[in-house]
Amino acid sequence: MPFLLLSFPAGVLADRTSRRRLMVIAESIRAASLIAVLVLAASGALTLPLLAALGFIGAAGTVAYGVSAPSLIPALVNPDQLAAANGRLELARTAAFTGGPALGGVLVGWLGAAPAFAFAAALSICAVALFVGLKEPPRPKLPPRHFLLDLREGTGFVFRHTLLRPMLLTAVVFNTSLFVLMAVYVPYAVHHIGLSAGQIGITLATQGAGM
Image: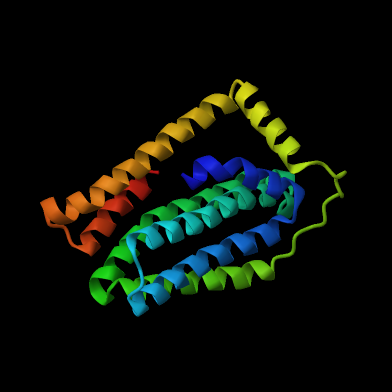
């Protein structure tokens, strides 16, 4: 749901503000949501609605980061290096989709959920520290415009474009189907197939390898 609701607003922010700063804020939001889960779980106050709300907040940070990172690449590399830089970015993303679930499942099965969340939060904090030191070239100052006007124009452009429109519709169907599948798969794998946390992580890692 955050991807469907926030991608366009995050794109406007990435276009009008510092993308490095937006990445720092987005990763800080992800780290804060993970830390909040840890604190609430340790105090016995974590409930399913709170977990869902924190998951939404963390996913919102993911959306903002996912929009900002690719848009920053052209400002950091020469045009003839753009294809290689985008390839490395996608390779890193694929490695995360593949290695992340496997490592997370092993950590949950070996140490428990709390250390796994703590490890993820520590990685996010390290990422924030690295992003703070990133040098973003200055951009020409754009004339002031209303946020909603930019949002309407950007959305209209995507829906009118013959290539971007089917890409958007495909992404909507894919993301909705994927998250519905994930919501069903994990309980099914635990209660009906009898998979451990590590085994579930490995099966999710094969999905990342396919991506």
